[in-house]
Image (cartoon, rainbow, N blue to C red; front, side):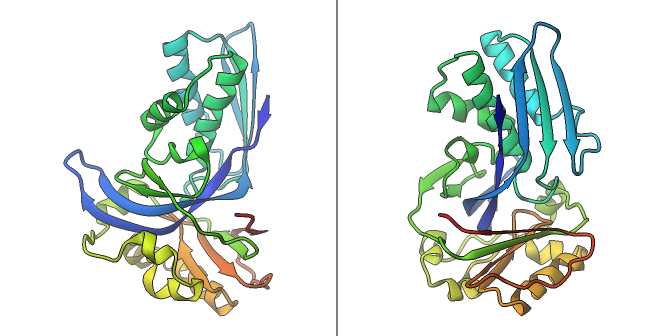
Length: 270
């Protein structure tokens, strides 16, 4: 079976407080986009096999999150052996959640291959064990997310018809370091209210709290955001803890050349 795990961007990312368990509570909107990996899983009579190809694949075969997803279901349901190949097209360490999506799509494929009849609650339970933002990809629809990014509320808004551009520079931002240095802000306008403002108002109200420290350490990421606005973006932001930057445009943009960067565009369908 072949599937195409897509990724997401964060529309706003408010870090509200540090939790007693060492994690942080956040408020964000997860918005699915169409950059996709390719994942193939087939049953096999031989031992379990995992292989990977594509971009940024150094060390991805060691303790990969797709393997962890398989091991969870192996332990719970005693499923048989599979051969799994992951072709990476989503840049690794970009704040786009590609690995989380790969893991949840692995759960879904294994559920289908072995007829496990897992419920929605089952998927959420396994996803939370794999990573904080994995749960989003169970439904894979725009959601307002709270706590560690794994508690959701539905949200009703549309960006359909806008052009979305995503640029990922060749730098890696450590999520652990980003959280270590981020400043928390508890008193702010509700993100649900902000997201329903006119798009042209977002740049004054809709923030990613990680930008303050990440831009200081990686000024090339800040430069990409500046170039997005100079190219006519109505709104631009870093996604997650970086390094990707996205911009929304009313018309198809003519972007400058971003040297050594991954660049992608689509018309929003949601």
